[in-house]
Length: 162
Image 1 (tube, rainbow, N blue to C red):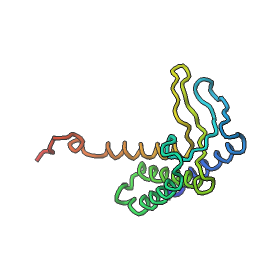
Image 2 (cartoon, rainbow, N blue to C red; image 1 turned 60 degrees about the vertical axis):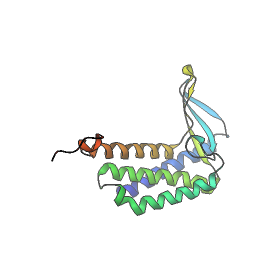
Image 3 (cartoon, one colour; image 1 turned 90 degrees about the horizontal axis):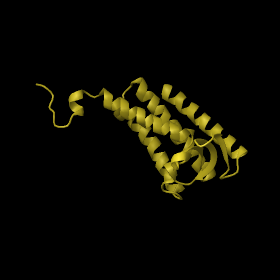
Image 4 (cartoon, helix red, strand yellow; image 1 turned 90 degrees about the vertical axis):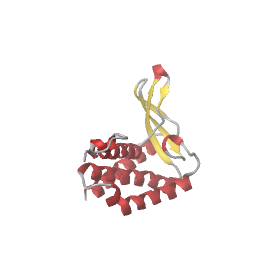
């Protein structure tokens, strides 16, 4: 039940924040929160993460549905029943559903969390709560999967003792 509750919590938070951004900002409008580091900026993203594959909203919608189906069908194959993997599953499903809801309803994904370091002229593409949930969930899955394997299987070319 944890993955389901977490998925719905992420979906609700994601959609609530995006609704607020769409009501409070005009597209492209930006508010400085931490000068020279963090803004809230309303971006309409028709692509995937960080604007890649821009304009392919229809294909990305289909891909999202396929990924959701694969996650549900193969969850027992890919994921253990550990707390970390249940959290990762809930985060992935919630994040995918959050962006899928935007794509299906609006034709684009609302991004608004905008980090940059002005002094270094470095800018990270705007993202949203769903994107953050997906990235954290993938990271959690990879980290816990890697750390839970026996040390001998992590070292290439080293055979386990007989």
